[in-house]
Amino acid sequence: MTRVFNFSAGPSMLPEWVLKKASAEMLEYGSSGQSVMEMSHRSCDFMTIIQTCEQRLRRVMNIPDNYKVLFLQGGASLQFSMIPMNLLVKGKADVINTGLWSKKAMKELKKLGTCNLIASSEEAGFSYIPKTTKDQFDPEADYVYICENNTIYGTKYHQLPDTGAVPLVADLSSCILSEPIDVTQYGLIFAGAQKNMGPAGLTVVIIREDLIGKADEKTPSMLDYKTYADNDSMFNTPPTYAIYICGLVLQWLEEEIGGLDQMKTINEKKAALLYETLDQSKLFKAPVAKEDRSMMNITFVTGDAELDKKFVKEAEAAGLVNLKGHRSVGGMRASIYNAMPIEGVEKLTAFMRQFESENL
Ligand code: PMP
Image (cartoon, rainbow, N blue to C red; front, side, top):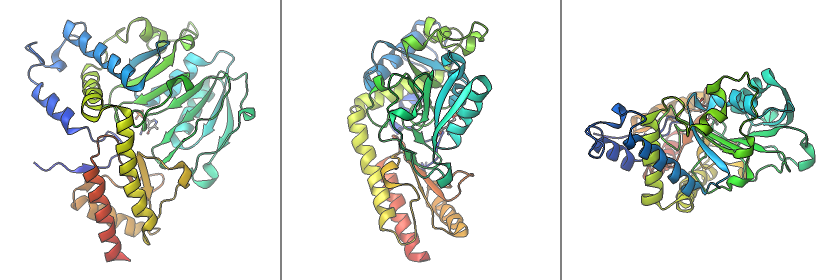
């Protein structure tokens, strides 16, 4: 068996420790006589799995007691609709446009209320994070929306906007669990699991309690955060296997890595290795503003589309797969989430240097 280094933006690599444990438990979980996939979601074994998963997430992310953790489905994309459905009371929200995923959120918000565009980096191909000041935000807005890590372009907020008393709502799909964060800075955090948390099919929402229960009474139960909060995410059948794997990823983070401080150190080391290679290169360029660089998604180009294609193809043959940039921007993108071992980045940077020597 040869496992490749998979630089996909998501679904993406899972820690080998997690895959091996899941594999060992595939036919029989504990002494249950069954696989987690076959278990009733109301069984004691599964109740322990979901509760342990939530407790681990609370410990790892240091989530305060006045925040609920909700396990949902529908991908991060369903949150683009659920957020305005649940949080709009006065009917308006402020948004910063940092790319495709914030634009998709704006599109859904506009169907339900007023979307005030506060700042945008669209004119520069979303290559930076617009800086904002508190006085730009409407103190009467129901929330301020941002996409904290922009998977497609490789930008990341290193300082959150100061929104005053207005709750900050943030899409952390591609940076959750990559470093410690202060949850109290947010009203709502959401993330599709398929990058840093587990497999596709699970979406995690972390929401301050006072923001729950504001949805219009016509809101379908399955789209109301209150339904999930009141039923411990068990109103209907949750994505049981994805929650189980997410629990294993969190166990790996806690017990094998040692928590988010250690994870951040490892992620910084991996990202520094790749950015140093890019900064020293005469062939490759990193298009993103230095102060807004993401640790998780690193984009680069040669400036020649044909050469980019050649790079992606030859990298794949060398066991470095999924380096093609998002179809809307082209070039290359290396997604180096938590589960990407440093060896993968070392192999990629060595390959880049070799490619440069052969193609410059
Ligand atoms: N937000 C961000 C930042 C993403 O990267 C993605 C997917 N790559 C999404 C939202 C959409 O996620 P999903 O496919 O789970 O709806």
